[in-house]
Image (cartoon, rainbow, N blue to C red):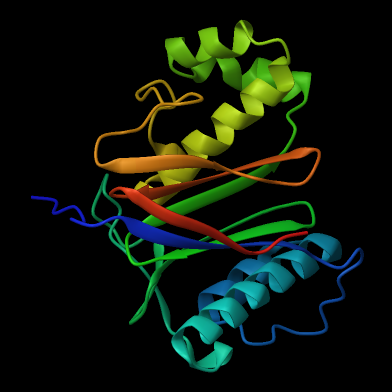
Length: 219
Protein backbone atom coordinates (compact mmCIF):
# COMPACT_ATOMS: atom_id res chain seq x y z
CA UNK A 1 0.00 0.00 0.00
CA UNK A 2 1.31 3.43 -0.95
CA UNK A 3 1.34 5.88 1.98
CA UNK A 4 1.01 9.48 0.84
CA UNK A 5 2.40 12.47 2.76
CA UNK A 6 -0.12 13.81 5.28
CA UNK A 7 1.23 17.36 5.02
CA UNK A 8 1.89 19.56 2.02
CA UNK A 9 5.23 18.96 0.30
CA UNK A 10 7.46 21.98 -0.28
CA UNK A 11 9.36 21.93 -3.58
CA UNK A 12 12.62 23.71 -4.35
CA UNK A 13 13.44 24.38 -7.99
CA UNK A 14 16.47 25.69 -9.85
CA UNK A 15 16.03 26.96 -13.41
CA UNK A 16 19.47 27.45 -14.91
CA UNK A 17 21.04 28.21 -18.25
CA UNK A 18 24.27 26.54 -19.25
CA UNK A 19 27.11 28.52 -20.86
CA UNK A 20 26.58 29.18 -24.54
CA UNK A 21 29.37 26.75 -25.45
CA UNK A 22 30.05 24.51 -22.43
CA UNK A 23 33.48 22.97 -22.59
CA UNK A 24 33.71 19.59 -20.89
CA UNK A 25 37.36 18.85 -20.15
CA UNK A 26 36.50 15.86 -17.98
CA UNK A 27 33.71 14.30 -15.94
CA UNK A 28 34.14 16.44 -12.82
CA UNK A 29 32.15 15.04 -9.86
CA UNK A 30 30.05 12.63 -11.95
CA UNK A 31 29.59 9.05 -10.76
CA UNK A 32 30.17 5.82 -12.74
CA UNK A 33 26.72 5.60 -14.34
CA UNK A 34 26.78 9.28 -15.33
CA UNK A 35 30.25 8.89 -16.84
CA UNK A 36 29.06 5.90 -18.87
CA UNK A 37 26.10 7.87 -20.17
CA UNK A 38 28.27 10.89 -20.97
CA UNK A 39 30.73 8.74 -22.91
CA UNK A 40 27.87 7.38 -25.03
CA UNK A 41 27.30 10.80 -26.62
CA UNK A 42 29.16 10.92 -29.94
CA UNK A 43 28.69 14.68 -30.37
CA UNK A 44 31.07 16.65 -28.11
CA UNK A 45 28.53 19.48 -27.60
CA UNK A 46 25.85 17.08 -26.33
CA UNK A 47 28.38 15.35 -24.08
CA UNK A 48 29.49 18.72 -22.68
CA UNK A 49 25.91 19.76 -21.94
CA UNK A 50 25.17 16.46 -20.23
CA UNK A 51 28.26 16.82 -18.04
CA UNK A 52 27.42 20.46 -17.23
CA UNK A 53 23.79 19.64 -16.35
CA UNK A 54 24.70 16.72 -14.10
CA UNK A 55 27.49 18.70 -12.48
CA UNK A 56 24.95 21.42 -11.67
CA UNK A 57 22.63 18.77 -10.21
CA UNK A 58 25.39 17.40 -7.98
CA UNK A 59 26.37 20.89 -6.83
CA UNK A 60 22.75 21.62 -5.87
CA UNK A 61 22.35 18.29 -4.06
CA UNK A 62 25.70 18.82 -2.37
CA UNK A 63 24.51 22.17 -1.02
CA UNK A 64 21.22 20.57 0.07
CA UNK A 65 22.90 17.74 1.95
CA UNK A 66 26.12 19.40 3.11
CA UNK A 67 28.26 16.89 1.21
CA UNK A 68 30.86 17.21 -1.53
CA UNK A 69 29.20 16.79 -4.97
CA UNK A 70 31.59 13.98 -5.88
CA UNK A 71 30.80 12.07 -2.68
CA UNK A 72 27.09 11.72 -3.42
CA UNK A 73 26.09 8.12 -4.17
CA UNK A 74 23.26 7.84 -6.71
CA UNK A 75 21.24 4.69 -7.23
CA UNK A 76 18.24 3.60 -9.27
CA UNK A 77 14.90 2.81 -7.63
CA UNK A 78 12.85 -0.20 -8.76
CA UNK A 79 10.81 0.39 -11.91
CA UNK A 80 7.09 0.40 -10.96
CA UNK A 81 6.36 -1.54 -14.13
CA UNK A 82 8.79 -4.46 -13.93
CA UNK A 83 10.57 -4.10 -10.60
CA UNK A 84 14.04 -3.92 -12.16
CA UNK A 85 16.49 -1.29 -10.89
CA UNK A 86 16.10 1.21 -13.71
CA UNK A 87 13.46 3.49 -12.21
CA UNK A 88 13.88 6.98 -10.77
CA UNK A 89 17.42 8.08 -9.97
CA UNK A 90 17.83 8.67 -6.23
CA UNK A 91 20.39 9.49 -3.59
CA UNK A 92 21.47 6.58 -1.44
CA UNK A 93 20.61 8.80 1.54
CA UNK A 94 19.00 12.19 0.99
CA UNK A 95 16.05 14.09 -0.48
CA UNK A 96 14.20 13.16 -3.65
CA UNK A 97 15.27 14.98 -6.81
CA UNK A 98 14.64 15.24 -10.53
CA UNK A 99 16.62 16.73 -13.43
CA UNK A 100 15.56 17.83 -16.90
CA UNK A 101 17.46 19.72 -19.57
CA UNK A 102 16.52 20.95 -23.03
CA UNK A 103 19.19 22.57 -25.17
CA UNK A 104 21.03 24.83 -22.70
CA UNK A 105 18.19 25.15 -20.15
CA UNK A 106 18.31 23.01 -16.99
CA UNK A 107 15.58 22.43 -14.40
CA UNK A 108 16.33 20.71 -11.09
CA UNK A 109 13.70 19.88 -8.46
CA UNK A 110 14.27 18.76 -4.86
CA UNK A 111 11.61 17.68 -2.34
CA UNK A 112 11.00 15.39 0.61
CA UNK A 113 8.67 13.24 -1.53
CA UNK A 114 8.99 11.64 -4.98
CA UNK A 115 9.26 14.38 -7.61
CA UNK A 116 9.55 14.77 -11.36
CA UNK A 117 10.38 17.85 -13.42
CA UNK A 118 10.47 18.58 -17.14
CA UNK A 119 11.49 21.53 -19.31
CA UNK A 120 11.11 21.60 -23.09
CA UNK A 121 11.43 24.08 -25.93
CA UNK A 122 8.22 24.96 -27.75
CA UNK A 123 7.21 21.99 -29.89
CA UNK A 124 7.42 22.07 -33.66
CA UNK A 125 4.51 21.11 -35.88
CA UNK A 126 6.41 17.99 -36.90
CA UNK A 127 6.79 16.74 -33.33
CA UNK A 128 3.16 17.60 -32.57
CA UNK A 129 2.01 15.56 -35.55
CA UNK A 130 4.06 12.58 -34.40
CA UNK A 131 3.00 12.59 -30.73
CA UNK A 132 -0.50 14.09 -30.64
CA UNK A 133 -2.32 10.91 -31.79
CA UNK A 134 -0.62 8.97 -28.95
CA UNK A 135 -1.95 11.22 -26.15
CA UNK A 136 -5.12 10.72 -24.13
CA UNK A 137 -8.19 11.66 -26.25
CA UNK A 138 -9.12 14.48 -23.86
CA UNK A 139 -5.60 15.91 -24.15
CA UNK A 140 -5.79 15.71 -27.91
CA UNK A 141 -9.01 17.72 -27.80
CA UNK A 142 -7.48 20.35 -25.49
CA UNK A 143 -4.59 20.87 -27.89
CA UNK A 144 -6.67 20.90 -31.06
CA UNK A 145 -9.07 23.49 -29.57
CA UNK A 146 -6.28 25.82 -28.37
CA UNK A 147 -5.58 29.13 -30.06
CA UNK A 148 -1.83 28.39 -29.95
CA UNK A 149 -1.46 24.70 -30.67
CA UNK A 150 2.32 24.61 -30.18
CA UNK A 151 2.18 26.27 -26.75
CA UNK A 152 -0.76 24.11 -25.68
CA UNK A 153 0.97 20.90 -26.74
CA UNK A 154 4.22 21.83 -25.01
CA UNK A 155 2.44 22.64 -21.75
CA UNK A 156 0.54 19.34 -21.80
CA UNK A 157 3.70 17.45 -22.67
CA UNK A 158 5.89 18.84 -19.85
CA UNK A 159 3.13 18.24 -17.29
CA UNK A 160 2.72 14.63 -18.40
CA UNK A 161 6.48 14.03 -18.68
CA UNK A 162 7.09 15.47 -15.19
CA UNK A 163 4.53 13.07 -13.71
CA UNK A 164 5.84 10.05 -15.62
CA UNK A 165 9.34 10.84 -14.36
CA UNK A 166 7.96 11.29 -10.86
CA UNK A 167 6.38 7.84 -10.75
CA UNK A 168 9.59 6.41 -12.18
CA UNK A 169 8.29 4.70 -15.30
CA UNK A 170 8.86 7.41 -17.90
CA UNK A 171 7.75 6.84 -21.47
CA UNK A 172 7.42 3.08 -20.94
CA UNK A 173 3.84 3.89 -19.88
CA UNK A 174 1.31 4.52 -22.65
CA UNK A 175 0.79 8.25 -23.23
CA UNK A 176 -2.91 7.59 -23.79
CA UNK A 177 -3.47 5.90 -20.43
CA UNK A 178 -3.76 8.99 -18.21
CA UNK A 179 -5.45 12.36 -18.65
CA UNK A 180 -3.35 15.18 -17.20
CA UNK A 181 -3.70 17.96 -19.76
CA UNK A 182 -3.56 21.57 -18.62
CA UNK A 183 -5.23 21.12 -15.23
CA UNK A 184 -5.46 17.40 -14.44
CA UNK A 185 -4.14 16.01 -11.15
CA UNK A 186 -3.35 12.27 -11.06
CA UNK A 187 -4.60 10.48 -7.91
CA UNK A 188 -2.19 11.09 -5.05
CA UNK A 189 -0.06 13.56 -7.01
CA UNK A 190 0.12 17.31 -7.63
CA UNK A 191 1.20 18.71 -11.00
CA UNK A 192 2.01 22.41 -11.45
CA UNK A 193 3.30 24.65 -14.21
CA UNK A 194 6.68 26.30 -13.59
CA UNK A 195 7.47 29.80 -14.91
CA UNK A 196 10.05 29.38 -17.67
CA UNK A 197 11.87 31.58 -20.13
CA UNK A 198 10.36 32.57 -23.52
CA UNK A 199 10.33 29.66 -25.91
CA UNK A 200 10.19 27.02 -23.16
CA UNK A 201 7.61 25.41 -20.89
CA UNK A 202 8.26 23.65 -17.59
CA UNK A 203 6.35 21.65 -14.99
CA UNK A 204 6.80 19.80 -11.71
CA UNK A 205 4.97 16.80 -10.26
CA UNK A 206 5.21 15.76 -6.61
CA UNK A 207 3.57 12.91 -4.72
CA UNK A 208 1.08 14.34 -2.23
CA UNK A 209 -0.31 17.85 -1.83
CA UNK A 210 1.91 20.61 -3.18
CA UNK A 211 3.01 23.11 -0.56
CA UNK A 212 5.33 26.02 -1.25
CA UNK A 213 6.85 26.10 -4.72
CA UNK A 214 10.13 28.00 -4.56
CA UNK A 215 12.21 28.77 -7.64
CA UNK A 216 15.64 29.21 -6.09
CA UNK A 217 17.34 30.46 -9.24
CA UNK A 218 15.93 31.62 -12.53
CA UNK A 219 17.36 32.77 -15.82
